[in-house]
Image (tube, rainbow, N blue to C red; front, side, top):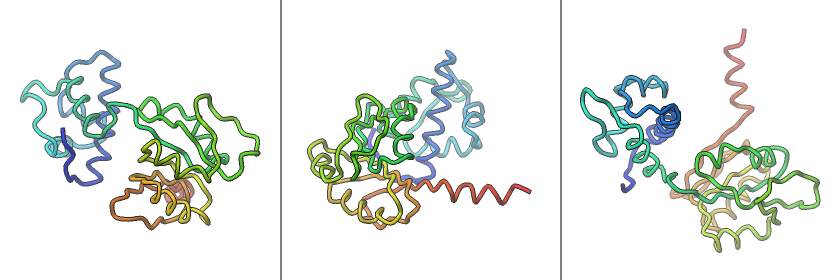
Length: 206
């Protein structure tokens, strides 16, 4: 199934649908209605049907969706039907925690290498992940055709590092640095600012 232009929010919701379908499959559920699937994903049934319609016709009226079939179609669209190689840049406390997070492999992403300017600092790196000096990053990206990067460096160097990532051929960055990155239009950046999220939540705490 070829990729087409769709809203980024719709792509995000595809990941929610895939998660919900995975749980259904683990519970030996073979068929699910749009109402039940939308409820499991936290969206309205009409939104679910609209999102799926970007990629074709799925399901049978009155019967619902085949769990395995719909999950296969969604993972193909997302490109997670096979392992995607990812590297991590910035191996401080947050970077190490991200390396040790088992959810990436479960979702089809494999971190094979991590890069930092200080290799002497004691840290516990999971087996199978190469810890390399930052100077080797661009060459590694080109040699291994790395297109996805997790960025966990301080804000003051985030833009400089992102410039190097662009030179290395990056296409997508998951940015944990509290900085707004300027990148070419063909590079996608998803930013996760943990402090900002807590600040937003604090509004609702009274």
